[in-house]
Amino acid sequence: MTAGKYMRRLTKHAAQVGLALALDLRSVPAYFATLKKQPLELGLPWISLGAIRFLKRFLQPKMQVFEYGSGGSTVFFASRCERIVSVEDDADWARRVRHRLGAAQNVNLIFTAAPTIRYRSDGQPFEEGDFTASSYVRAIDGMNSDGVLIDGSEDWRLQMMRRSLCFHHVEPAMKSGAIIILDDSWAYPQLRKSNRAKRVTSF
Image (tube, rainbow, N blue to C red):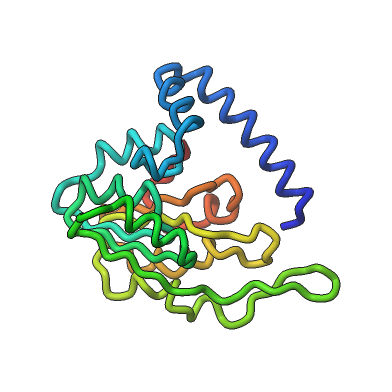
């Protein structure tokens, strides 16, 4: 995806946020609260408020959740679910999340560096190593998840974006009734059109 194309999508997305708030006035106070404090401080996922309300209804105390990318979502899930596994590729951010989690015993926060993104002489990015075979992508293997949040670091200029590759890795193994939450799904139109889900909801 080119930088120009991404900026056009981002502008369209900002307009959609404004319209969504106008149509859902109960979200306005919470939205502005997230502008004053970071989601990690608030203990909230950095996703839409409608999606957060959905998760509050969906999550149950005995559930297991996996997430690509840690943060306020880790705190949110830890207070609502039995077990959380989160994989993070930013060591400093992982330390901040661990500090925010405090004494939580139901979280396994894994730090593993993803393949390095480098740039060719023409400025185009490429990844050193196979991201799909990395310990970052495969950290979920063997876990029977009720929900997977795909967030985490992304480089929008990569031809095969990281979250898309994570989605393709986890989707075949999802059990009946489980959900995948894809952050910024507007940036992955091919995933919204082509997937195995019985139902797709955009917030």
